Image (cartoon, rainbow, N blue to C red):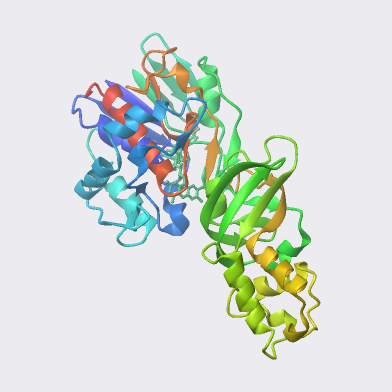
Length: 403
Ligand SMILES: Cc1cc2nc3c(=O)[nH]c(=O)nc-3n(C[C@H](O)[C@H](O)[C@H](O)COP(=O)(O)OP(=O)(O)OC[C@H]3O[C@@H](n4cnc5c(N)ncnc54)[C@H](O)[C@@H]3O)c2cc1C
């Protein structure tokens, strides 16, 4: 039996290696780029956060988020790490549960998968861009400009639209829609958020720890704590990725409230700033030693404190305003950055049309899908790759008749 897999990314490689466990099966893995796992090699800032030890407890979203449960419980973080260990990858877990290759290089993950693909019953076709997919009487026909592949079973593992420069495409959605499947609205997630606030540019590159809470028309939308980074257009960093899902997708006022000293109470900060009134510091140095210098200056300015005054001249009201700026700073949000800079696509092919126990289509027998092309996205911190491994492996085992 020939199993065709379109997409040599995380889920496609996991599917190929799983299906090939059946020696009777011949796997043909088709990848449009010059090498497999191109996006995988860029994940986690080049370190590849390949799973999260807490992923078995949830952290997945979609119109039917429970669809992810079976695949994740059948092949969760623990089994995934055993599997990677059997492929020769050393890994290390951080206290947060995020797991990285011990080498700290995403390419180590790509390499062990690449080696595992070197089996007699796996053919990897690089530079093969599937253009057309057709259901035939005996299976499927996949056509690229140069070559046609016929297979009895087909796994669509083309990924999502996010990270377009690294290979994100509409292909998978197009192929599955062409065979009768529906797609939900696609949105960028784990993405930077743009702000109209003029102060943002002066803070470009500043990183800080904070508690961030996003409000839509005054209602809490999402919140988290962690590292934030200011960018040319707005705010980014792990804490923003975590709370970026569906921000600015509905009309109305969107703001992000930032507490730059979440572990210090407003009273404690006020008393420290009062103490500073007895020092010769200038107002521009009011928050020196507490926050990043550039951030401190921007916050005290936005508290209405003229920078050429002396701290000793500040009033109780000035101190109150400075505390407010540090502990409750509001930034207006306009929109998320586009799919090219998003890490993940929220939305995708309707999961109701697939069997969560096998990843097989309920519409077209013999057709499977896995990974980001489906309407499942995970939290920041290794959840999305875990979904790729779990769903890819399940699709491969089931298509290969092993499970
Ligand atoms: C910058 C960045 C950093 C990230 N960091 C992390 C992280 O640290 N941890 C984490 O969990 N997640 C991370 N993610 C998300 C994660 O990479 C994806 O969710 C995951 O790779 C999805 O796996 P996939 O197999 O569905 O798709 P992909 O890995 O994108 O693979 C799809 C493959 O299909 C190929 N393809 C598409 N169309 C065709 C076609 N027509 N013919 C042939 N081949 C085709 C593509 O070239 C691609 O290689 C990150 C994403 C980005 C963009």
